[in-house]
Length: 494
Image 1 (spheres, helix red, strand yellow):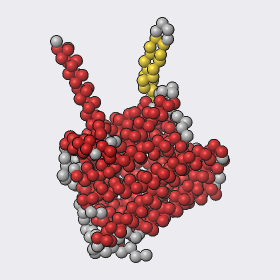
Image 2 (cartoon, rainbow, N blue to C red):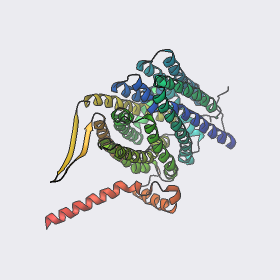
Image 3 (cartoon, rainbow, N blue to C red):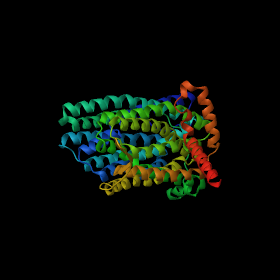
Image 4 (cartoon, rainbow, N blue to C red):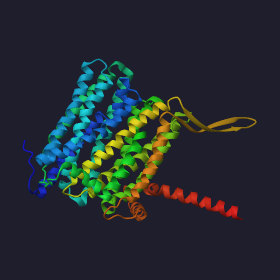
C-alpha cells in the first residue's frame, strides 16, 4: 500500500479524499458507539472502579495528547502525514480488541488492565491526531471547513444515535434476563469496535495527501514558535482554562445518573441521543455562520448556554417525583446538544484558522499538548473532590406551614457530584472571559451575528426552529435583571 504524498491533487482526487475521510469517520463513530463513555463507565463500575479511577479513565484521552510531540518528530522525519495518521490509527484501534479478549479470558477483568490498554488506544490516537489535522487543513478547501466538518459530524452522530439505541436496549435486556453475561457483552462490544476501527483505518489510507513542506528548524525552537505568537497564546490560555473547568464536572454526569439516581443505561443512552439529535439539527447552521462570520462569535453565543446546563445539573435529583427529574434531564440534554455542537466545531476550526499553513502541525500539536495537561487535570481533580464531598452536603430549602397543611420545598441539594457541577460551571464562566482577548480574522461582533442569525432563523423557521431565541436567552435575562435593579434604585431614590 503506497501512502506517499503527491505534489498536486486534481479536483476529482480531492473529492474522493473527502469521501474517504467521511467513511473513516463513520466507521470510527461505530467504534466509539460500542465503547462510548456510558458503556465504558458502566463496564468500569461493574469491574469495581472508584472515583479516582473514573477520573483517570476520563483523563486518559487528553493526558496522552502529550505524545503528540512524537507526531511532530515523525512527520518531520518522513514528511508523510498520511502514513503517520494511518499506521497510528491501526495501532490505536487494535488495543480495543485486546481489551475485549482479556475480559473474556481473565474472569471479571480488572480496572488496571482496562486503563493499561486504553493508554495505548488513546496514546496512538493522539499521535495520529496532529498528522490528520495538518493533512485535513491542506486537503479540505479553507472556505468550506465549517460546512464540510459539520456535514461529517452530522453523518457520524446520526450513526451513533441509531447504534446507541440498539446497544442500550440490548444491554438492559441482557442485564435483566442474563446478568451473568453483562461483562462478557461489554467485552464483545470492544472486539467489534476494534474491528470496525481497523476497517476505518484502511479506508482512510485511500484518501490522498498533498505534499507539505516543513521547516528544518530544531523541534524545540518549533515548539516555542506558537508560544511566541501572542494571539495563538491567548487562544491556548482560553482553551486550557475552558477544558479544565468543564472536565472537573462533565466526566461525572454519567456516574451521577448511574450511581446517584440509579437510572438504567438505556435511559442514559436515550438522554445522550436526545443531546446528539439536537446537536445534529443545529450543526449545519453553526457551521454556515462560523464560515460566514467567525468561530469566536459562535463560541461567545453557545458557551453561556452550556454553562447554564452545567448549573442545572445541581438541581437534578432534588425532586421527589422521578418524572420531574427526568424532565429536567431532557431539557438539559437538549440545550447541551445545541450549545456543544457550536462550541466543539468552533474550537476545532479556530485552531485550524489561526495556525499558519506551513507550520500547522506544530501549532496544532502545541495547542493539543498544552490543553491536554489542563484537560487531564480536570477529571483527576474532580475525582479527588468527589471523594472529599462524599460525606458532605449542603441543603437549602423553603418551608410553608399553615393551619391545614405544610410544604417543604428543596431549593438546592448539593452532595458529592453536585458540588463538582457547581465548581465546574463557575470556573467555566471565568474562563469564558478570556475569549475576548483572542483575535480572529474576519471577526464579527457577537451582537451582529446574533441579530443576523435571528433574522435568518425566522425566515427559515422549518430548518432552524431549534435555535430561535436560544442564542439570546442570556442577554434577555441580563436585561430583565438590569431593569429590575433600575426600578428598585429609582424607588429607593424617591
